[in-house]
Image 1 (cartoon, rainbow, N blue to C red):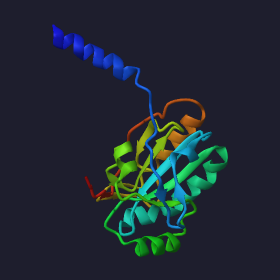
Image 2: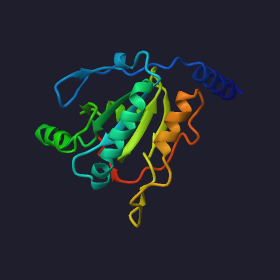
Image 3: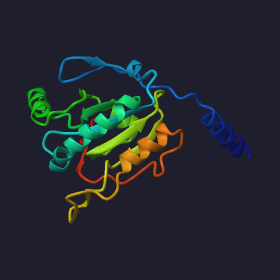
Length: 188
């Protein structure tokens, strides 16, 4: 009986827990430090998990740039995270220039943002509220669904659908979608 009461109390406490943004200060490839305070006043925050040597991630950078172009003026902040902690800084800098990212690419050696969102795949996108609540996690679109299922042009635009819903004050229609690509190396 005591177990049931304690479990119920924990569930109630969890239901009323205050969401707190993680505290971090992450440097980008331009040597600018970014923190969650930048999220204040934003309608949403998008974090793309990328790396230098994943072809699926590299192929979708132009779409990431288009999404930023289409949503930034609507109050959405954008960041990419170099998700592979083993890649040299110089290689990330060159990659950022070569692929012409139009938003900050962050170094996150302790994987704060991957742990916070539960991201496990490159490329993968997370949509957060300004207080750090996870609103969407998954693929950007369906141009790659498996090793044998690739499209020249996507037919589903999961990230855009999630952003449209969030900006309209609704939950993402599919808050989690399966991302396909390279695995994020995990550090403890």
